[in-house]
Image: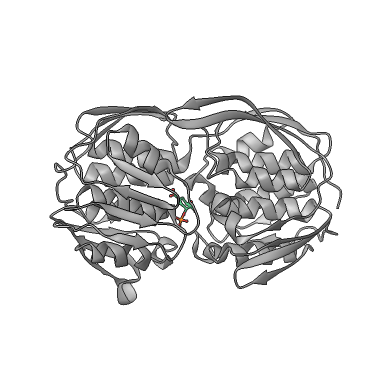
Length: 424
Ligand code: S3P
């Protein structure tokens, strides 16, 4: 398969999803008015706005990407009058559960048909250990989830799965506990929660793979500009990297070291990727990312690297299909419980396009460069990152794919298709 292109120019991607969720959740708990600029205006993050509004925070939208949030205070939230709908958003329901576990009232959180199949025991178990009463469907595993919180005690919790959502839920619940909460990670995950809570005046101790949060009376409001989302930028990095002659710059991207595993993997594959104008913004490292296309070769992604590129694996599979040799990704069993089973989703789509690939229980392999079979129908499985990966595959291969549903892209990146189509 010969890649098309080349693609030239500059793109700006929307605000980071993880940081946007946290900004609204934490600003809603602060005492006073926060301002959030660069907010991701997408379905997932608006679910978090809905949750905090239902709990009594006042969120005013100055523009689609700018919010003013009048926090209710850590102990000023009120019982929601109705079931909270987290839509497709795992971050809303899981991190939100940590807040709800601290509240002396009843909350019920549900989601769409995909979210209602995603595992919740990972947050329910430790929050119950802290003293919250939580019920959920199918043996306390699946949403809807029903929480009556309050009177929490501190715990030390060793995380059985690497998950920033679970870590964040426990750190938030820890603000309400009677003694410190310590979370121990075997593999480090994104630390946006630690950075933001510290900036808001909470006391956190970090040492090696361990983070301790101390109970708090209040959080200070914040004034934050959310950087561009590296998980959204990754689609453009891959597209430019696999198309020889391309030269693309993605502006103002968050390059938190716990999020840049895809850049490291692409560099190992031979991609020329540089950070320009590195700076700090909103307590996070930010850079313009310049990428030049060329011929890539296969790589191996080991378990230890997975948390740093977990959301970028579908895009990296596209890079692997254009690269010379067999790329292997292991230790990524978590992909099976994302918005879709991303191992199954990518392998079935790539296979039907003629790409040689296969599954492991905890990963996949892709052998390139592929001989393509055009026009086979592709399925996004209602998963935004699968849909966007298929669209960059289509663009890089210069062929038309029949993708069943791309509306799911709106959960994280409304405007993605237009931006992609506009690339010269
Ligand atoms: C996220 C953490 C990751 C990631 C998700 C966002 C977060 O999930 O896949 O898209 O904002 O904390 P897990 O915590 O399940 O690993």
